[in-house]
Length: 127
Image (cartoon, rainbow, N blue to C red; front, side, top):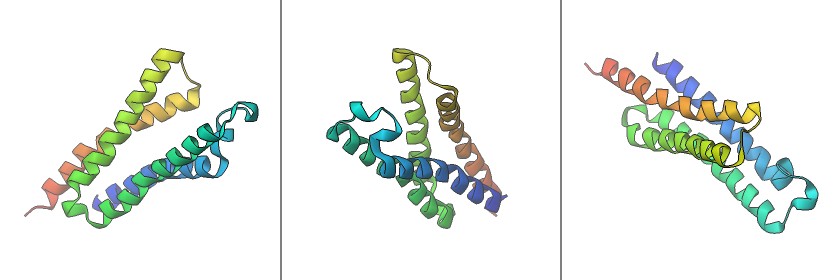
């Protein structure tokens, strides 16, 4: 069960890492037509691409230090869920996003399930 948790957490954290890498490489062209791109917008998209990669790096630390990783896990999970909430605000403000983004929002909220799973694992591993 512990190994399943670690692998699942790494796989889930790899998705924003991959999307962040795409934003880093493609810049704003990934999101808007080329004629609307400014240097500032492109720089921001690439910057946030790097930021999207950070949870995976932290997750590598979490899975290798599982017994003492609760605080970092909660920070990574809570910020991911908060990002999903921010996307919901954007959807409310500017209209429903495409289905792929709705899936991302659901994914970002569902990561909260890792917290009780972690707590269950730690309870089972104590003598």
